[in-house]
Amino acid sequence: MPKKKEQPQSGPTLWGTDLPFISLKPFVPTRAYLPLAQADTLSPKALEKVPGFTYKPLPEPLNTIEYAPGTSLKQYGNYEILHTTPESNTWSAQGLDAPFIVSLSGGLGSAVAAERAIQKNGRENILLWFADVKKENADLYRFVHDVMDRFGGRLYYFTDGRRPEDVWDKRKIVPNNQIAPCFYELKVKPFRNFIQAMNHLPVVYIGYKPGEDERMSSTTASYKEAIPEVTVDYPLLWRSAETRDLVAVCEEELGIQAPLLYKLGYEYNNCGGECCRAGITSWVRTAESFPRRFDHMEDWETEARNQGDARANYTIAARSREGKKQPLPLSQIKEEYVPQAETLYQREQTKRENARRRLQDKP
Ligand code: SF4
Image (cartoon, rainbow, N blue to C red; front, side):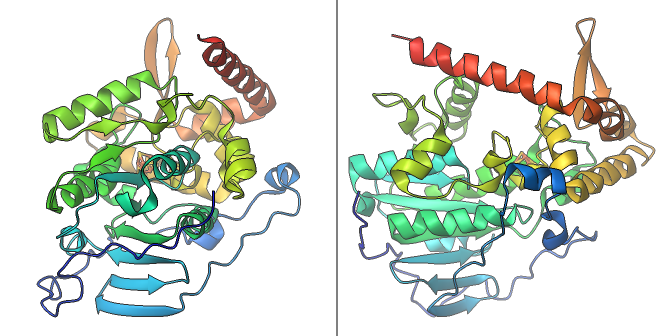
């Protein structure tokens, strides 16, 4: 598809001088974070899977307009990024009329969904919105820029300022695949605030893949409850449903190098392989590929469980024994499961291939 260079969308107040949020203070973290440069250093084992891989520096903006701390417009040739904060997120949505919006996650599903949505409706009718939780792998940011270079126009780029750990600490929980308030607080809630501040509610496009039926029903139900008037749609289900390997679709059809995490075997690209909803094999992969990230989460989990409250009974990961779910600390994953890494990867690969075959065989 040829690149489009439509004028970026803007709200009527964007260029005004009335910035009501300018005096609000940004969130100040209470704990030290693992610097991303250290976090993303690949182990020798991971480098064997992506020989010669190096992180690419992000493009420099040609022009930057500062509105307030954390709120600025960065222009990069055929695309631009409007950075917003909790204070300026809804302000940036005022006056917007686009009929469709895609929440880009930095992963392949939402990027390919956006591609399909643009091909169907035209770039000028689609808003793109992204939330940065500040612990992504560096290659995710390169991917976001490459995607924008293809799509052109504006990306609304929201940064809360908190990281997932800040949300978990505040709530005094150890998160897991049942309880992950970081996702809601740092991504879903600000996205919903954004669309509700627009002139009209747009149709929300989400990049879930065929087969992710449970996620789709729970997302549709959640929107029905929170914003009943909104329509949620899943472009990867449109005919013909996208059941191919998204790495190949991204590289061969969009001409964009897929994010590093997928090349290392992950099925997602968020939080640098530290997602609190990930399963055992994914944690084994993080222990092997990004040992600093794994150690950071292991330390966080140990510290949280030692606070002398209900957190002691919970862990990020879990396993089933005799039909019962049991907590499984990351330290135990390192001890028991990392030595069986290759078997686990093989098993996971077979499962994925079987699932894809079943989907492709569906009439
Ligand atoms: S990727 Fe996982 S840990 Fe990160 S914000 Fe989303 S749910 Fe939370």
